[in-house]
Length: 529
Image (cartoon, rainbow, N blue to C red; front, side, top):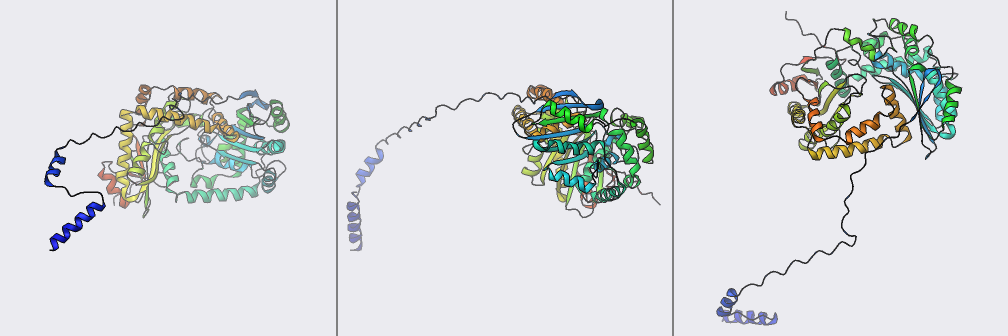
């Protein structure tokens, strides 16, 4: 009875849906019937905008070259007029920097530059600062390894007044004893605090380990704690006289200004700037610093290559700076680089961009993106007048110090052995063009870049020729040059907790490290009793 009722209900539902119950014969017949083929896929509608255009290869960016003029008292002027915005930027570069520090007076070029804007002309330090702020201008002075630069940026309407202030800073600093006491104390305090910054320590120790402690490129630009205590105001005055000379200066001017306006300002405000007494001051700088001179400031080249007179330095293989309990280690691999004027350097920049000079570089992708050991890893060739350094560096979690260093060395070896891929070359050439456009994008950046070329004693057309070399580079040439990053023979510097990381370093076969301190000095091994 229930079966009959259930069958009736199924029939009613089937009828309501327009279906009829299948008989076994019908089911068999339908199972044997061929299935209809699938309908053809509908064609994609045509793009109303037409086919996607093929973009031509971008032309190499050609940086604008400044006009070179003769300035007062032997100086040179690089003028680049840009009248799109009412802004003017100036950079006064002299080719004397930290590499010219006398022996035992590391940081003298740095602290000399730091004192220039602490009162100049008729104004005290406070009055000078207020005058700059009142004009809405920015003025800064600093030293680098191979030179020192004073920069100014200001609206065109305030140029004359602001340039007069810059001229006072460069040509008429006051060097007052009360300001020296304050600036010197702040400087020494900063040097003492530097030991707490693992990244700064890594940079300092890397250069000392490569070039040798106390050499022109082997000491930090901002100086050493021990040397800073012995540097007095007489040494600063003598170094200024020897280094900040018009006959060694290049004045770059960029922006909304004409040639006549520039020459008039130079004649009015820098006409009395003189190199008189520079030779005697060069000797006085080293004597006042209470140490034998590596070379007199103002002589040709970084300390006149005085480091060559010292015994040959053999860089160690592994250096460890102990920071007990540190949650991170800073790992670095450093080896000899090239001079800024070396014709290979433009192409080495392409190699470095792929290796560690961009966010998508191999080092950063490996240590940060793939393994999560670091917030960032990178590499660079230093930009120096004489052969400098190649450095790869990363801050990593302490427990991954060994594995991260192993991966870093592997990436360097892979690049040295195989070089860039064709896709990488195309990418880094595109990025190179963008980076160069960015460097010359604004008035202030252009003045800064030209100032850098000047202090390195490179021609004003250097970036133009370097860009052509990079954009025209072939894969075969770049692959051949990649050996410049070979880690064989390089020095490895690790700043981190010795107790935790020493077993990791031994596990990757680096051997026993040399112990160095935070000032870039080897720590003598303890003698056995």
